Image (cartoon, rainbow, N blue to C red; front, top):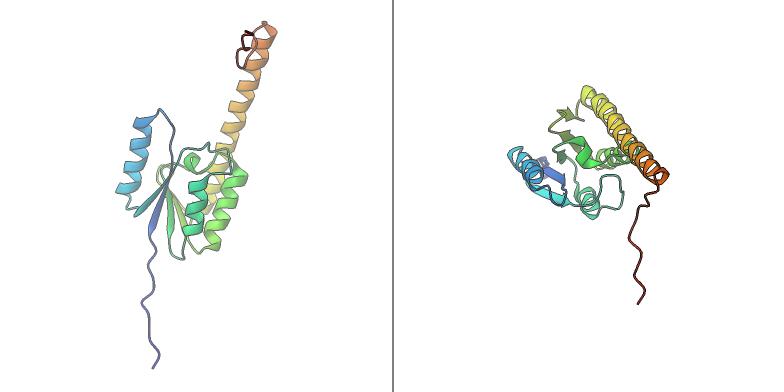
Length: 156
C-alpha cells in the first residue's frame, strides 16, 4: 500500500534590511514581520542597491516549496528593479510566494504580480533620482571650490 504524506505547508520567512542608527525604523520593521507570522527573520545591514547581501542569499537558499518571503516594504528587498526581478525569479523557482506588507503585494495573485512590477519600477526610479541629486550636489560644491573626500594626511 502506498503511504501518503500530508502536503507540506510552507512557512513565512521575513527579510529585514535594517539601517545602522535607525533603531526606531528597524524595530517597526521587525515587529511588523513578527506580527505577520514570520517564523524566521533574516536581518541584513547592507545597502539595498547591492547584490552581495549574505542574509538575502541565505534566505533564497533556505526557501522551500510553499514558503512565502515577507518584507515590510518592497525597498527593503532591493532598490534595483533588475535585482527585484531576479529575486522574484529565484522565489518562483523555489515554488515560494512573496508578500510586501506595506504595499499589500502578494505574488500568488495576478494583481499582486502586476503591482509588484510597478512598485519595483518606482523604487528603481527613486534610487536614480537620489544618485542624480547627489551628483549635482557634488558638482555644485566643486564649482564653488569645495573638495569632497577625506582630508589629506599631515606630513610629519
